[in-house]
Length: 217
Length: 217
DNA sequence: GTCTATAAATAGATAGAC
DNA sequence: GTCTATCTATTTATAGAC
Image (tube, rainbow over all chains, first blue to last red; front, side, top):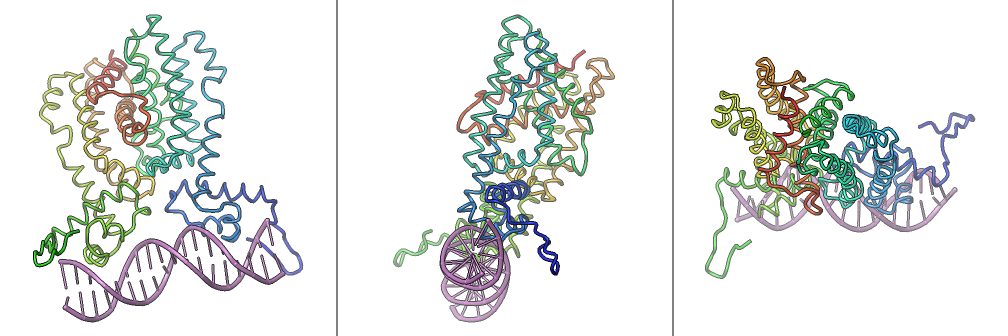
């Protein structure tokens, strides 16, 4: 936290309001994600952002408002950032009825996404345990769309006689279960004692194969 | 909290030390499970147990010690309470190489177990996010054994030519993923907006079918 | 916009009477 | 074993100077 060195004043600071707000937000994301809402103090956020606590409360009236702003930001970001069904590779695979490409690409995308945003995964689980409204919102907005999207693809392939008549919702849950559980293991437990050490590509490949063989006619 | 009614003194209290300790523990399990470590106050625990805060600290020197005692208790209970491989139905199924019975029974057992001990599931996830040592301990003690157990069954069936050569660890992760993710959904999100409404039996049946078809030769 | 100082509330933990 | 009272540290949040 360099401020002054004799006459050579090194100015790190005096950001604009929006910059400062955004910086506090970024710091807070990391801390809330690491320690949860109750495990994070405003003092700590201020210290990590290199400002006084009063500054935090100037930008966000209460700690809850700050938390809300974070989840809001993250949920929106996650909800808009290229959903799988707008990925051209996926679109093509769907048109061509290349089941394996559909599920493999979806899977590998999900696993990479989880790995790139561990903070968000942790925030999401913390807020789900805390029963924060925004966790439910994320599910209503984002997860339910995935169920609809993959579910409808499966329904179509069943109608075309390519897949067995299993309830699509269960199939989606099975597939998402493999993927999310795998990421969850990587984030929460496998750090210390690896039960399973595979690349994302190999995991996605295996999960897609198991699922598709499991439901093909 | 009935204490006295005129001369008719209704004695609810004066438990023995062990009874009181155990009662505080039960109350604390519920509260920690609902609100996590940092979200639960010793005051609240005391109030819910109907004793003063001083009593809580007589039985458990610190809040951390109380938390540790809970996880310890739960991890031991969970680790010893009839592991799947000691269930006679499972044993029989394994001997008879009835793959479907093996996976279905394991699955339905797991789902029921999760449903019966939601508190423990929540505690486990909270403590995993908090990176509490006992969460890791549970994995090392209990989850890794499941990987060994199911993994070795799969390896055997592969040697016998009944299953494809997929890495057993991945298959176990896929199956546990379906089960745990399903329970997690039921606990955390599906309360309000059900994405999927099926009985444990149907879910376990579908998951077992998908997995076994997915890896059979 | 930023700080120092501080208020107000709540947290975990202890002392000592009964 | 149990309570009341209290202590100390921490936490959220605000006031007011620059």
